[in-house]
Image (tube, rainbow, N blue to C red; front, side, top):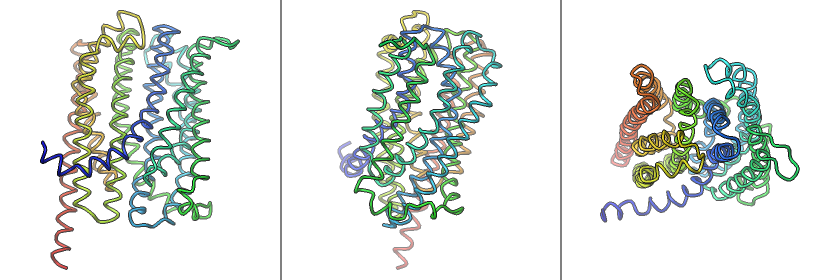
Length: 459
């Protein structure tokens, strides 16, 4: 262990310094849904919590498509920054802002026109659907400011500036919680809004975050050299395509994974509102640890991009492996937390004993898949930083839609195992993704390393 630590010590330190602020920032996206679930669970009851579960299982598809598209700029920024091509970084920001702004509007239209019509035909309890619709509409509107926020966040993080987005995310979440309680419960003369109240708090929170993040990037001296080339005239088809060639497959990676979990939530909703509420609690807690791991993944993508741009392939490989070590250590701790606190953690969301009993069972399963969840998302990040996104996208489709969801349907619905059977299918999907992505990383990184050794030997 000491030898391993000495070998990777430098890479552990640089990865953690970059990753820790990103972890807080990434977790912020999920904490919005967590806060909504906790506030609604305590102040509006089980039916309202089931409505939040239904909306989140649908809305998260639009969310991850948007996040995936916005991530397209980060590896490119990291690579060009590694080459010290600052002018191209500013030009890429111009193109990313256009792409992400259009994506935010299109995703809102998709949710408001398409999903609002679909939600009433998913065999869900009528009282759950009635409360879900206004919340879903408000969450859809919030995607536009979120995409603007993420444009500037991914730009800054690609350059290694991760602390400021973390601070903005933390403050934004505090604002979301305060406003959510006021709107849902009806304080200070505000009429109680129920589930719609957390929709309004999220929308206000994301608008404020987008404004502050944009102001920071444009006013900070850290970005002056990059922003010299930021202009609408630098928007062109080739740069937009270069961003989308990474962003679109990344979005599809998230879609294949998250849609499988959303499909699982809909399957569970056909069992009972109690099972659906329990699923919301367990998946929300698992999503927190996943987003923390995705912070490590984002840092690994940045470092991989830096090393690839500088043609330091051995450092790329060692840095990537160090990120695998970090995420395994972190997810081992969260697995222990879920296993030990499986009966205690659900009390944060509800006092309904029936919901807590089922959620406690699901948290044991969540503890089991923590390592798979962490390693697969870090594998995606490393490969993304290296510009390898198409084959990993195929892997995620296989893992979740050919393995995970069908197995969950077979065990949970056909074999009558209920909500736990559906979750066993999700475990199989995560395991498959983790293995496939690790072998892909080994293949690509060794190929780059061998190529570099050949060039050095030839010279």
